[in-house]
Image (tube, rainbow, N blue to C red; front, side):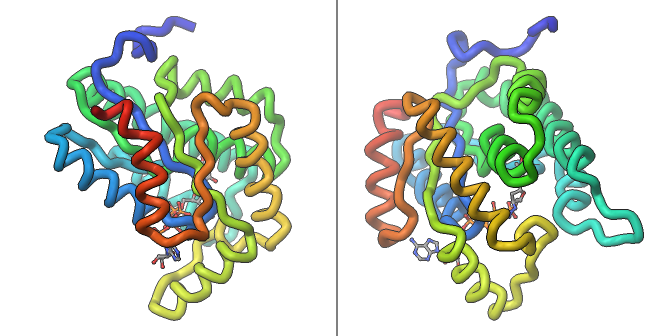
Length: 221
Ligand code: Z5A
């Protein structure tokens, strides 16, 4: 494979990803980290997966909300997430890193391993290869894994639903699926403890924010 894109060694910016089950507080914590970056005078790009580009957002709509006579198959779902990522990395993430931005991305390759690999049971080796193909060397400098049990995640989701939130296709999977996803995330953290930092998502928002900042501060100055 020709790699004309980034390598982690020659980038000027910092690439931070957030991972974890739904309702773990990723959006909340990303907003707080963005504020820290602003205070430090760092140019910051906050983005998300699936999504982050026009094509990615269109794919997001399909993977999250498709309802029709024909369901999205597990294999198609995997490729849709990867297609969104390939577009995102090349068109937004790498250019921002080259321009010296702190890029904060809500979900990335680890979500594919956790949801499509551990959750759906698709081949983990193939997912590793596909992730590498989509990101072309653009691996996060650090990944914050907000850890929350499937039960707690479900409970927070229920509360949010009461305030008009609508569950998506993946969120509405049975609890065992979400347990496998959570275990998958923890396995990933164990296998790549240099990059993936586990932060308990059950503490207060303020406490979590401080813990995350302790990990990230050395990278963003
Ligand atoms: N997916 C996949 O399968 N494969 C892939 O490769 C990728 C994604 C990239 C994207 O959903 C879906 O795609 C996701 C995985 C799958 N589906 N699932 N399931 P999304 O982007 O729409 O949603 P999400 O990533 O799951 O995030 P979320 O549900 O929006 O949650 P969050 O961002 O982690 O949490 P939050 O919005 O900050 O907070 C959620 C609620 O918890 C809210 O009411 C907060 O007030 C509350 N909260 C936050 N922090 C706390 C604390 N500390 N204590 C108590 N309550 C809190």
